[in-house]
Length: 91
Image (cartoon, rainbow, N blue to C red; front, side, top):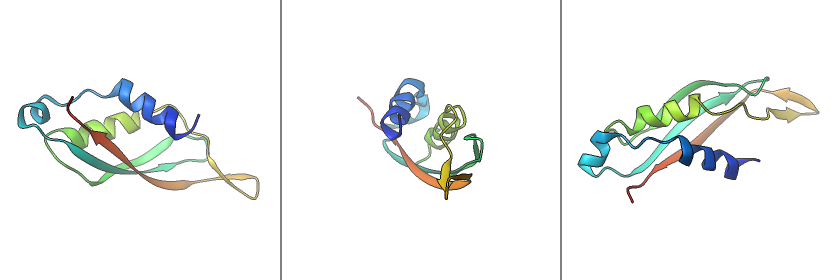
C-alpha cells in the first residue's frame, strides 16, 4: 500500500495526451488535493502544470484514484491536504 501502490495505479491509468505526444511535452504536473475523513479525494487542482493536456490528465487520474487511508491525529481521522507530482515521460 502507500505511495508505491498509488504510482503503480497512476501508471496503469495514464493516457498520454495526444497533443503532448505530438509536441514532445514531458515534465511534472503538481496536483493538490484533500484526503477527506472517509478517504475520498476532493478539491483536486493543478498548482504547477506543463500544458498540452497533461494537466487535465493528471487531475483525471487523481479523481479516479481509489480511496486513501485518511490521516490520523490522536487516533482520529482528519482531513489532510497533499501535493503530489504526476510525471509525464515519453518512452
